[in-house]
Length: 516
Image (cartoon, rainbow, N blue to C red; front, side):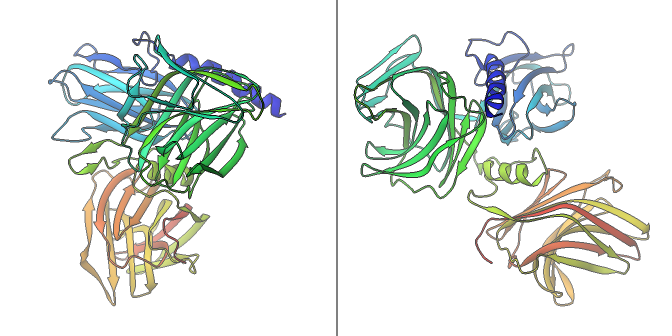
């Protein structure tokens, strides 16, 4: 059975690799990674589209840069069913009218469509780029020259025809090719495109992460057997953080592949040919580890040799604007696992959290003015967290305003916070203190055209006494919330004499902190 699964992945990868070949220009409507696509929006051509294949849990970024000052581009991504999954217009308005969708997580494997259109009647030229990881290059190394790369413990290193050829020999020898001039922050994505690997005896090839010097770095290695592992090297001593781990996506003996890593603080996620194959948390730090590079490892046998050709190596980092990093105005998915992963990758939540609990269904009715609340898993108290649910409102008597929402910071019936939406199109955050709600500590807004007959996705992220509210995957508001630690759950709020029933599906809580 495993051979059949491996063969299937190998066939899929062979087909997928055709879509990422590093040619010099787009010649059809297939969007290829790290290969800009050019286009023109005009009155006759109001939109252009490209297709790409995305793997579940793959991390991608898309940027549309207006070449013509007359164009205000709009970016939209749809799945194979034609459903819009995310989009953007003016990620940094008014400084830029370019479009950016950064660090999204592909919700399921399949074909997707990227559409570039324009805001209003603007027209002009643009460039569309899709990148693994983040949207801003820190390094885009095509190995045209030797450049700033420094070999360590390699028997040879040369650059020819856009390829870096490296070789190491000896018994269990680790060779490194690093760029000491890099300065990497807490979050970055690195990927090496390997053209070929050959060896006498077994081989391992990978990436040096958090590199400080030849005796201090993190080693991500892929073996000829189709396994990966993570090693912490400190003062020359190796400590295994994750031992050799197989994955059905990794074909044993494959000599051409892409190996990537998302480094986020002390958490490292591993990607093979764009597919997510594993994550390791609590990776030991490397003081001053600000560089990265390629790593080779010979077998533990006399006469061992490894040769490899690296086509490209690039590092992408989160895009910065004047106010800091780009905050996501929209999420791809409301499902617990994908949403939590995307929130971490896009910097809304820190890495290293965990799912506190998931509840398939809960129900709450309110027949009188006031708030009915239902703490869930009441013995779990959260300070920094994400709380999500899919909500359906049903009215048996609709007289006045009523709604459903999320309960958090719950101490008792007179001390809690709530985030809600109602049948008037309103949504907000409120804090109850004693017998009333403190209007100075919350907010209220109205969104026109709210369809209260449809289900709505609510997601609340509380971190460092600051709350971010997402409704139907759209960012609705951010607000300071004091004393927000406590139990979490659901609420049904009644501002009049309505009779409302709230059904909550897929209720989940993600713990950012370690408090009980």
